[in-house]
Image 1 (cartoon, one colour):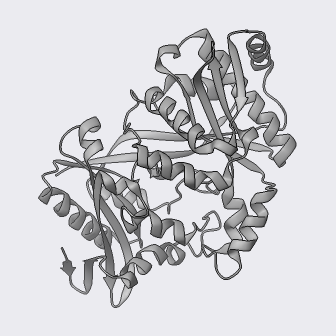
Image 2 (cartoon, rainbow, N blue to C red; image 1 turned 90 degrees about the vertical axis):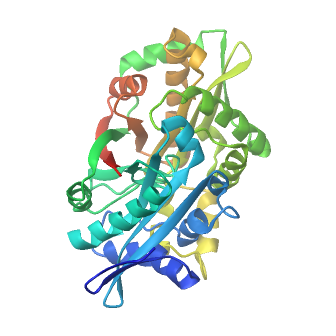
Image 3 (spheres, rainbow, N blue to C red; image 1 turned 180 degrees about the horizontal axis):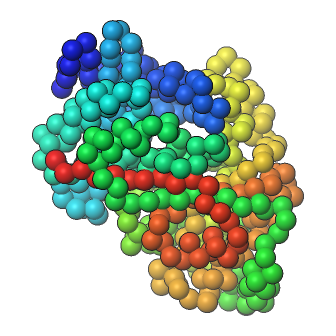
Length: 384
């Protein structure tokens, strides 16, 4: 599917050269943005390559396009149809993502048109996004908080993208927040009291993840996750292959003191995953692991010293949500990981995110520990 307008061409990504141009475009668009952090290009290629490198494609399909004007790449976009999204978010729900564009409404409109036409041909009745490629990757468009660099696995966009998206007829349907707080100063006294009560509760046992059997631990964590998050907006369960894939991806950046599993009466009931901000360790690599990037990164990962930590995932089994035990477990994990982050990794700040605007329990936790919203993302919808 190719679209033309004057000298503007929107064409599908078909060749390796096309895919390289698709992956490389942000280096041009963010060249003057001091807050942008270049991703590892190999990770982006693996994301979009297909089922051999991304098991998301086992239950989904995607198409990718480039916008070209006068021989210069000026935009890109993806469109996705995910069978699990259709089951959990409703029939006819297509998605778009990977959107990058020069500040030109004509280019943006052409990209959205080709994506919507593709989704319409797949019998989709609405398009929501951005999701690059799924809600488990980078959901939402950054609309506030451009000055602070993104942490690991969080999206960053140009300020004018919001204007391009809304002018193309997309309406906001969901807001997502990232919160940040100082962690080297300790938490407020009410949190200390909760932690003290939790430590005296004989039903609760908290332990660090065992990296020597991380595949098994990852399955346990993601089994809790699929239960804990199942009522959240946008939830799509992770498949067994995706669990194995994520475990393999995360293992090099897993540190046992930063991932906690909480048991109640001997049964795993909650977890919290914290990651060092890998963007601080890869920024100078400019997206490339060759020729010497691999060696640099491996050395840095042995003894990472970072200023920020990110909590991407946390969950309590549904049967315990809203209970006193859930409160105890949450703050116990948060405090133990805070201590390790400061003492062993030198971190001074922590990020919690992303958090949906209607996730009351997590918003309450963010408020109690005196964190502040630093980034706001929006998800949009358009009828087809």
